[in-house]
Amino acid sequence: MILIKDGRLIDPKTNLDEIRDVVIDGGIIKNIGKFHVDDSYEKVINAKGKIVAPGLIDTHVHFRDPGATYKEDMESGEQAAIHGGFTTVICRANTNPIVDNPETLKYVLDKASHGKIHIYTTAAITKGLGNEELTNMEELIHLGAIGFSNDAAAIMNEQLMIDAMKEADRLNVPITVHEKNPHFVYNAGINEGAISKQLNLKGSPNVAEDILVARDCMLALYTGATVTIQHISSGNSVRIIRMAKDMGAHVLAEVTPHHFSLTEDAVLTCGTMAKMDPPLRTKKDRFEIIEGLKDGTIEIIASDHAPHTDEEKNTTFDKAPLGVIGLETSLALGVTNLVRRGHLSMLGLLEKMTVNPARLYHLDAGYICEGGRADLVIFDESECFTVEKEKFASKSSNSPFIGQKLYGKIKYTICNGEILYSDSDGQNPA
Image (tube, rainbow, N blue to C red):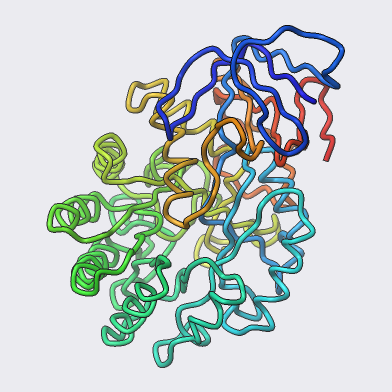
């Protein structure tokens, strides 16, 4: 058995925030309360001054497996998740080959089954991520997919999107959409505005996102489907989603730590490490995103962990690929830029990284209770650390946060009762 002693136990599902001990026996939480240390425990973790929370859940990661495992694979992606305090992740379907067929889905799920954390995947909405034909959604759900997303390939065919939403609703699974109308986009990685003009680049304006957010909010209202708008970047989109919720649409919103932490100005200092899709936008957009997090319009924080090699990123801005890694800095960015600045309580932050993602995908996770699965993260909200390129567990290091000082150091990651990461001795047991 493992005893976690004197930690600040936070469970967003029950709003618990108290000093408690936790006893783990096998993969289960045996007891929660106050207990004496004795010889029956194989390990005692002194969690005094630290937070004990449900293992984090990331609904939006790219592990590049199959097709681009030189950037990341299932094993290295899992290690990045473990170092970031995540015990559950959901992969996206835009691999090579695409997860739009049983064979590729079975490959991904087989690789995932050998992991130490819980790794799930969405399947593609359409065949080949195109605009012509739906995948066999019922078959893919039956085989183990837990939702659908075309990721960056927006579905421009409205009837196809309606059909997809109706089928997802029938199957009781969410559809997740990346809202980018290609007719308005010249360079997806930079906001069309002051910085793009300064760099003499054409960019991606807010309207490219806003117009599809508005469409899909109304289609969600029409079909009754559960639709998640992923990685919101536009303040206009936040307001549209808020309105759609008020109208009764079952629309949820996701945001990345880089979109609530940075603005388009980061392109000037970080270059291609700040090139992502959707792009970083203005201070006003960032303010609207934070307001959306505060009032519950945005329910989920997810990393959009998108690894690329140094060679790929170290080129001109127009040629560099889109995306940044995020699993290993997600929690700390939330602590540093949301909790410490008074935008969210710690319980509010953890709600968006645990129980809310679990509810969206109907997962038995994201909470702490006696008899429940022992998936936990222990972290020190007051410990400051510097993000260092050499310390990433990911194969890639394409992060705009390298060199920044952040608060919220991961001390332990525990999944199924097994200690997978411990910062106490500088070693990773996994």
